[in-house]
Structure formats: structure tokens, C-alpha cells
Amino acid sequence: MDVGQELSGPGFAKAADVAIVGGGYAGLAAAVELAVAGIPVTVFESSRVLGGRARRVELNGLPVDNGQHLLVGAYVELLRLLQVIGADASRLLSRQCLELSFADGFSLRAPNLPEPMHMAAALLGATLSLPQRLAALRFMRKLKRSGFRLVEDTTVAHLLDLHRQPQAVRSHLWEPLCVAALNTPPVTASAQVFASVLKDSLAGPRAASDMLYPAVDLSALFPEPAAAYVTAHQGSVRTECGVKRIAPTPNGFEVSHDQGMDVFGHVIIAVAPYHLAPLLGDLPALAQSLKMTEALRHEPIATAYLAYPHDIQLAKPMLGLTRGHAQWLFDRGRLTGQRGLIAAVISASGPWQSLPPEQLLTEIHGEIGTVVKDLPTPKWSRLIVEKRATFACTPNLQRPAAVTPLAGLYLAGDYVASAYPATLESAVRSGVAAARSILETTGGQS
Ligand SMILES: Cc1cc2nc3c(=O)[nH]c(=O)nc-3n(C[C@H](O)[C@H](O)[C@H](O)COP(=O)(O)OP(=O)(O)OC[C@H]3O[C@@H](n4cnc5c(N)ncnc54)[C@H](O)[C@@H]3O)c2cc1C
Image (spheres, rainbow, N blue to C red):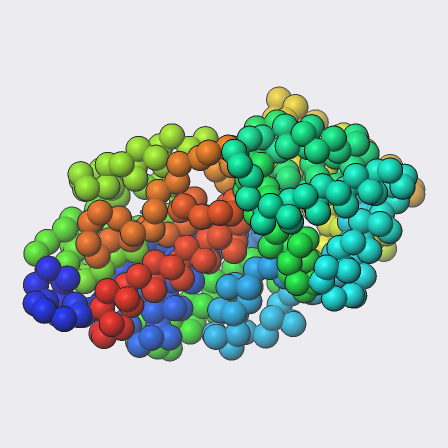
């Protein structure tokens, strides 16, 4: 059935069937992009639930996420694909102007003005002293003048030193943004990737800086409607069907999985970098890509869910804390209708990792108590720690390319080479890029 690139003679090779290994945001983005072009795809996902590192989990009968996520308006590819599959983004995501509010009184809000006034107005309106506001504005202007390209990559902490950013601006603006976007502490985070994030979010069109809060769980947001779309367009999505081995043949690739073996013309491997080794082990052409992924270090993210009586609310849907372990609190009552449920997020490594879960939950409850008056004991609380949430986004990182030396085999995932850190959007873009590479080499023929 499959016509591989090597055997197809002159002209375009046919795409034949495409196997996609991994049903996270990258894999399903690739699947949708190919399904739109009429290419039959089979998605293999080892878990029961689609979404990978952005998926639904059930706690005390409630659908929550393996980690509270925040999206921004700059996630244009994810928003485009939602439209393609007919999902109603305005129901799935609550869009609000950028607003950073901290419990200690700091706030910054981007007003509904055209770019670049929205960001200048946001920085000038921040609750900082005039010299601090001007320093923040100067920093953005200098980055903009250089096209957000640094002569040399360094750490975010060093970049902020070079631009003499005052402590209050660092601790309430740049450092929380760095940790939230790169999931890497400023002392080790890549300044170049941080600059790229600022370019696309704060310095982009006003809508790009909007905050998009998921109103549904992360499997229902994109992976499940994407799977339904793929299934309705000649494809199939097989959950609880992990891929064990990929072997090149003259006609394509033999893909051995939990339910047997099938042959495909092309394969997109869209698993997390730490799941690549068993799949690439038999493919000497991929040795360099594997070496790069094995050199990546990873950073954790913890999400604590604390369930209080229904009338407990935060002053804002998302509130920053600067003292203690929790960095951001999310009011799931306001965001998803789960009243009384607070999600507390801790990104990147830190002292919290040395605490037993029960103690960390108790301390986080105490931190929520500093912003909610007369806070009762939670009815229940649970901690989810994703130890390898994202790769550590450090300076000059070598990341493997989507197109591999083995014709017909592509990599997708948030770790694949790009200007961006590990996010839902970088995962989606990588999946779309891998799908387009197949369409380009085949002329989109199935
Ligand atoms: C706690 C947490 C909080 C985060 N917060 C944010 C946020 O606020 N905003 C944001 O944009 N990003 C956030 N991220 C990052 C974002 O979730 C990831 O970048 C993105 O989900 C990665 O998607 P992916 O498809 O590249 O990989 P994955 O999600 O890891 O998907 C890979 C899939 O492959 C499957 N798989 C693995 N091996 C096999 C195999 N052999 N056969 C078949 N299937 C296999 C896995 O089960 C998985 O479903 C967060 C991540 C975490 C963990």
C-alpha cells in the first residue's frame, strides 16, 4: 500500500499513509495539518488520554489538568488550527487583556490600544516609580531597535544586569515572565529565547499579548477535537497503543506497536525528548539528533490544587505571589466554573523540591491565606509534580531539527529547533512544520 520516497521514481514521491507517534499537541497538530491536505494519518498514543504534558487528570471526581496552563494571543498557530477543526476558541478560551497583578500591590495592565502604544502605556502605567518605569521602557526599546537579536546569547540575569534593570522591575516583571515562559530560572535561562518571547508577545500586535485562560481541560481544548477531526478525515487515532520500534524498509517504515505492526510511507515522531531513545536506537542516521536530545536537561513544574468552599475566590483570575513557594494562583472558579478550587503553580527548580508534598501543600495553603481573608482549611488538596515538564532553556542550546537525515522520518515536539521555549505553541508549530515538510516532498499526494 505504501509508496516510499526511495521507490517512487522521478517527480514527487507520494505521501502514502503517515504514522504519527505521540498524541500530544505536536502530534495532533501534525495530524490535523495532514488531514486538511487529504493525507491519511494514524496517530499512535501510548496513554489512554490525549494531550501528553497538557492533559486532563481527575482529582476527587473533578476534571483538572496535569498542570495549570496559560496561553497568550501570540499562539497564532494553535488558534488557527482550532479554527480549522471547527472548535469555538471563544468558548474554549477566555481572552483578556494582559494583566499582571501581584498580591503585594504591583500591577501592570495593557490597555486596549494599538501596538506599540499598548505596551508603552502598560509599562508607564505599572505600579512602579517613574525611574523604574522608564528603565523598563528603555530596555524594551533597546531590544526592539536590535530586532530582538542579541549579538551573543547569555543568561536572562546577565541581560538584565547589562540593561541596569532595577530590582522591582526584575522581580515583578522580567523574572516572573522569564520563569513562566521559559520554565528556567533567570540565572540560567537563555536571553535570546527570552528576547524572542518578548518580541512576539509584548512587542507584537496588541492581541498577541492577550492572556488566554483555558475554560475547559487541556485534553478537551485541542487534542480531543483534533482527534475527532482527523478521524472524520480518513485518519485514525489509536490510544493505549504505544510504538515500540521503527524500522526503515525499502518501501517506508515498519512501525511495531502494542497492537501489531504496520507499514507507513512517512513517520513523524512527536514524543517528548526523553522518550526518543527507544524509538531512535535502531536508526544510526538519527544518532546526532538523539545525542542532542540526551544532552537536554529538564525543569519541573508543580501544580497544587486546593479545594475550598464554593464562596472562596481570589481578587483576580490569576494573582502573582513574590514571597513563598507558589508563584501564581489561578481561581478555577472564575476560569472553569470549578468554584472554590485554587491552582497554585511553581515553575522551575527551587527550594520547594526538598519539601515533602504534605508540607508543601500546607505552606501553599498558608500563602493563599495571605491573600484571602478568613481562609478555611481546604476540603482536599493534591500536588502534581511534572519532574520533566520542559527542557531547561539555557543559552546556545543545540536542538535537533524537524527534518532528519533519514528521508521520510521527521521529529516534532516542543524541543525541536526553533526560536522559542517549550510551550504549547512551539509544540504545535513543530507539528505543522513536520507535516508541511511531508507535503512539500510529496506535493501533497496521498
Ligand atoms: C505542568 C506543566 C505546565 C505547563 N505550562 C505551560 C503553559 O502555561 N503554557 C504553555 O504554552 N506551555 C506550558 N507547558 C508546556 C507544554 O505543556 C508542552 O510544551 C507541550 O504540551 C509539549 O507537547 P508535545 O506534543 O511536544 O509533547 P508531549 O505533550 O510530551 O506529547 C508526547 C506524547 O507522546 C506520547 N508517547 C511517548 N512515547 C510514545 C510511544 N512510544 N508511542 C506512542 N506515544 C508515545 C506521550 O504519551 C505523549 O502523549 C507546561 C508543561 C507542563 C508539564
